[in-house]
Figure 1 (cartoon, helix red, strand yellow):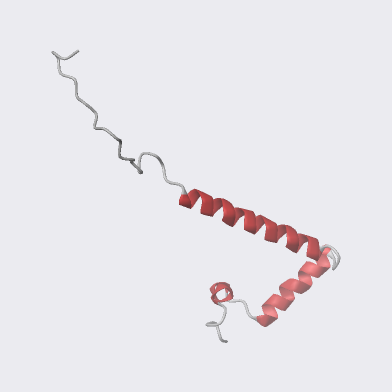
Figure 2 (cartoon, one colour):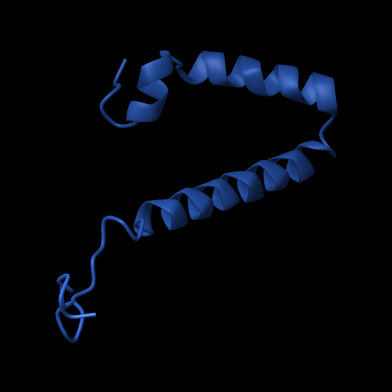
Length: 81
């Protein structure tokens, strides 16, 4: 079995016969007319999940990112109120 071409399927150890069996069971459970709608919904869900995870990865908390100020803060001593 050539697992180098598709590493995602190699993780689960699925080949062509297993995928055909899974696809056949899906057709029996949901029907051929319902499968495109299920696949479309699954695709949209994955797209939204990736978009949300990328947005949170790009944002950094304010405590990590420090912006330099224009003038340094002056420290007040006891006599200079």
